[in-house]
Image 1 (cartoon, rainbow, N blue to C red):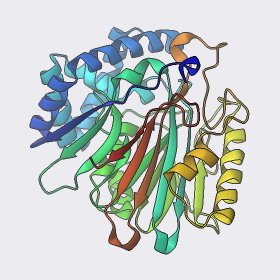
Image 2 (image 1 turned 90 degrees about the vertical axis):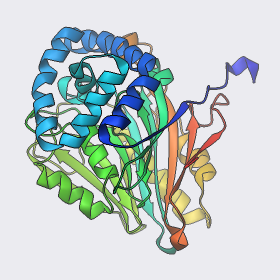
Image 3 (image 1 turned 120 degrees about the vertical axis):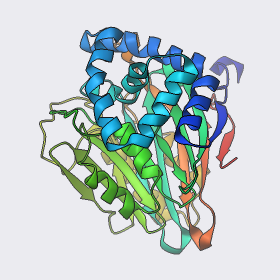
Length: 366
């Protein structure tokens, strides 16, 4: 395997618990170096994509800070703790958690996700997360244990409070970035919305909470599931569209809006419609040919697929793009919810599945 390059180094795992402030301080202290590295990475990315340096980004984040503090005060308190623990300004942490909104979605962030309600066999939720390789060393597997709330397990970037994962109530989230306008800083950023979902006890509660908070600040896609099945949430500041599974119980999404027409969405990733057709086709094949489906089958038959590379389901770096905004698949996650009252669980493979350089299968919970 030496000719293929080094095997992916597994991510750090951290466990956080206590009050919102205590959780934040633990996060900031344990991940201070990674959070600072994230700021350097995103500073370069913002300058490449939006011509804003980090000082300008922090100024823009002031409005989001007010919104997060007003609408989700406990999450804001946690973010203050992160800033305290990492010896940073609160606006640094807000900027990281609002980076999708501040950049108007202009990053080359591509992801392919799928949810599958297999009835008595349980619900699967899975995705490849595609992003710049420069953040890979700053991603972690994190658990968050809060009083009177479900326990969370997720894969996230250092400094970011909500991402891809599930909770002890079998509510799970995946996400796909969308580039569209407008953006509304009076609404919550998508990473805050993901955390709201992961603090909910059902997908209905998650949807109701996002609605009660006034919706989200930018057009984004959250693939949400509980033991009753998945739902595709195309969320925008102008209105939301929910896409239900097809006749096989499957719903798929990539990086463009499929049904929501409430916002202006200029052409972005030309490979996104191709990836959507491809993942739908591959999932249909799996559903009709496999009696028992696990993470290994999904990785081999779906998430390692390189059709239409570099903009494939298993994304490759595009050398024609600036280094600061090149994307590739950084990890693959397959979550399983609630067959026969089993506890939720996930398999995470660090690196590109099927490449020969991916690491061993990691498990959540640990």
